[in-house]
Length: 122
Image (tube, rainbow, N blue to C red; front, side, top):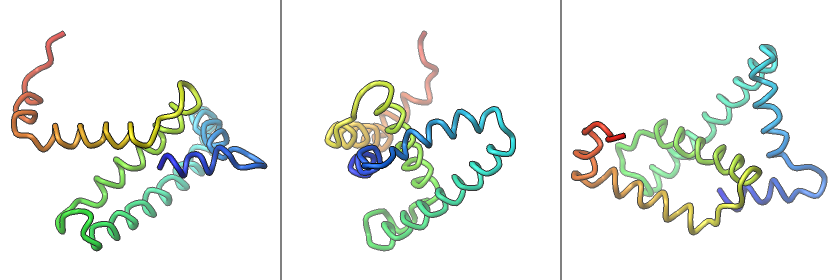
């Protein structure tokens, strides 16, 4: 995902990610653009879901993996990377991998699941 982000931000003629950010903002105020953007994003999400199904079929995910859940997660990460790239700084691929791995490990650990069932202290 980080490599793809750079392919899009380093395009010699335009930065597609800046166009995406502007579209998100405008779609919040313009109902017609919102409908077009929603349709486009639902199509893109469907494409990611089909890609995830290929990962599952190739053995990268368990045979019962919820491809829609994984697709939503991947899609959310992609959008978050765009925002953080433009507003904070680049996220190195190894840092993203480490963070996703740590989160996955925490979710898979029964102690982490038990802790997440407890209310958070403020």
